[in-house]
Image (tube, rainbow, N blue to C red; front, top):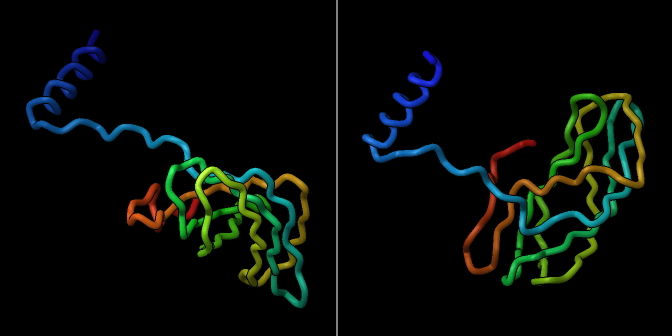
Amino acid sequence: MRIQRCAVSVLAGLSLLGTAPAPAQTGSPVTATSCRGGVTSIELVEHAAYDATFYNAANVAADEIHVSIPYGRTRIASFDVQTTFAPHAVTPVHLHKNLSGGLYAWESENNACNVRYVHFVDGSSWGDPKAQT
């Protein structure tokens, strides 16, 4: 009973202030349809290379996406991709970059290419351009 009263008090306080919690963000309008590749290590330098395809479900073209691909237990390869992602079309992209030093190697046909930010040609955007995961 005490927990219910606290929750009611918090909700009442929010309505008095005229603010409410922000709604949860829906899924990205640009999603990976495939994401093959991985990370190799040569002389303590990790090199990430992925061949991915992305589908833009929006009605307007996108000109930039930020992608994060987890590898290892806690590492993330992040890519900022600037190309045209036409509306309702699949766009193939080759992602590659040197990462911080290490001795990690991994390759998979099905990686998680997480789109965390999308910028559209009309100036609108989805997501957080500074998000890392």
